[in-house]
Amino acid sequence: MNGPMIITLSVLAVASALFMSGKVRSDLVAIGVLMVLMLTDILSPAEALSGFSNSVVIMMIGLFVVGGGIFHTGLAKMASGKLLKLGGGSETRLLIMIMLVTSLIGGFVSNTGTVAVMLPIVVSLAFSAEINPGRLLMPLAFASSLGGMLTLIGTPPNLVIQETLINAGYERLSFFAFLPIGLVCLATGILAIFFLRRFLPSNEEGGAGKQGGRSLRELAKQYRLTQNLYRIQVSADSSIRSKTLRELDIPAKFEVNVIEIRRKMSAKNQFFKTINQEIAGPETVIEEDDILYVNGPFERASEFAETYGLVMLDQRVPEHRKRTEESQYATSDVGIAEVMLTPSSRLIGRLVKHSGFREKYRVNILGIQRKEQYLLHHLKEEKMRFGDALLVQGTWKDIALLAAEQTDVVVVGQPVEESRKVTMDHKAPIAAGIMLLMVILLVTEWIPAVASVMIAAVLMVVFGCVRNMEEAYKTVNWESIVLIGGMIPMSIAIEKTGAATLISNMLVHSLGSYGPLALLAGVYFTTSLLTMFISNTACAVLFAPIALSAAIQMGASPYPFLFAVSIGASMCFASPFSTPPNALVMSAGRYKFIHYVKVGLPLQLVIGLVMMAVLPLFFPF
Image (cartoon, rainbow, N blue to C red):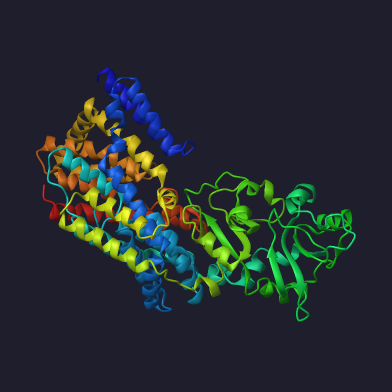
């Protein structure tokens, strides 16, 4: 081992440890790796920066934009909603239909985006069929990864091994080169989950209504809204008249929130039904006779009213009144919904008061569910965490706007009355046509694959499927792009310093004597194990050159070994945090870590064993 090799392997070890710890952002780790390799002269500046001009990175950017167009136009939601209705009320039919539809969409667009679109639809279907959402959401997440093996663009590791083969002078893979092996993966996955579903949360543990609290009544009851909601009227001589809520800074002074203002009361139902109803925002001006709906502890609400000479219209609400009014919390204009933060959400780690929910979406956060705990007071100073479920209130229109923000939140508890509405934007047919054009260009190979994807991305913007370039940039998961661009130079360094040859020699010497099948199993299961701790893309980037070198040393075809890397990196189900889709459904399905171990680990092992049997049949040694 020479000096550059020692440095490269040391950097790799440190980077892997940081990836596993999760304490440092993966894109920052990748940039750090790139800088160390460049500063130690292992790579030239051109080599160190070559990852960002790599066709894989450019294709990934284009695919994010194309996927954004499909999601923004409602095409994916409409298509999945229509197809899932065929599942009816049978849990088995719904399970199979969900996995088939999800895998089909996942074969062409981001698996995280696919789950984000499908999740509220599946929750609504589960509620309608009186099935615990936890019976369907984990299969949904797993199917999105299984679907990635159906096409060349289904998952980043597929593009990584394509690039490795081309750089080594081998024939490029066609668009549907993965389809046969992908269908085997999907069939195996559906069959295995059919038997493993007994380990998923049962309907007896909480049906759709109990578990998710998806109706208006259940959401209000779940978060105990009427226990914390009080009406306070502004009198003629009150000192807060003509002032904005921003000026008053009520939450900081009294630890209560003014969430709504009603200016004209209906005689029919004075407590909840109103004609003039406005969600309170920072610039809302208080007027005489306004009725403020205040959320917070009774004692602090009373103190607020007494300080400013306001009239408390409600004392503590009797228990029997709570039960009758829970279902009347929303009106035809204003409603409540439960949202979850996505794994890549920019809101994770922010205080609620800095979230921008009021300023950007005009909605209020009424409560936070964190594991089994409900946080209902002092929310402004609460730091949001991944896995939190937030109960928000706003107009149905603003809740729909919030739901469209795929990168930060997913609406998982929107009342079934609203979430059943699957709308199709007038741009959806255009998005479908652009998607079809891209697939035709990729299949026929009339032009380079990267050009086909970029043409489709540009057309999505030109035809308004993505509103403008700013929106197009927002559809891109830049953390993933920087991760790929930053880790590609590591694979160059592994090859350049001879580390790939060294590691492949170790694999060949330890397993090669048992034949190519044993070596294939070693490559597959090592990749499968490592991808439980680091990104599947980074894992594929690191192992692709090693697998290629090992195959060449044995005098075998590199294709089965590189396919083993791609499949092993993508089929990771044993941990909730190994892939974003796994993490995204964890809170919505009320899963515990043990659910992933009981269902995901056997599935991961079964698929690995099946791949060892079929890979040599499709791609002989």
